[in-house]
Image (cartoon, one colour):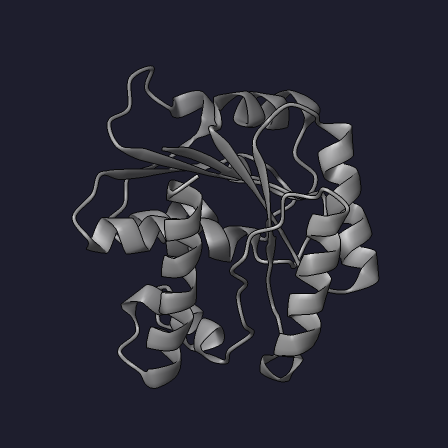
Length: 200
């Protein structure tokens, strides 16, 4: 499985989604590689934890796009920044079997996500609603139904905003590596996303 996680909007959970899905499979004993389109860029603060560095800290092999070996065994997850150069983003989209487009449920973020899909036709897109407030479950279900009714490829599963994500990042892991109630619940949501993507 080759998955690119992309959206022109920052702060919607691209890196979190990339690393959490990869970590779940890694912990299950499957072969996984993370590719970081953001690693070579200069806008990162010195020492900032890129997806590549964070993946390597989890024991997952990680590369920049230009370092990726021609033959890779197992699953490939590509994390793209909001300002990915057209050439690197296009390469990542062409490599993907599935493109996950994470977005919050705010109108502004949704507009950016839908415009992103319109700008890059072709891949098998899946919109993943992220950073959803627990108390918004009914509203989110109506939103998903509305998007599907308009023909948008929104996933049935979504990701709730938990403090566990901050805790995991501070510990250098993902929610899949946390043994707390919130961590297990958050990881289960991503496991459901992964199952839905794999089932087609």
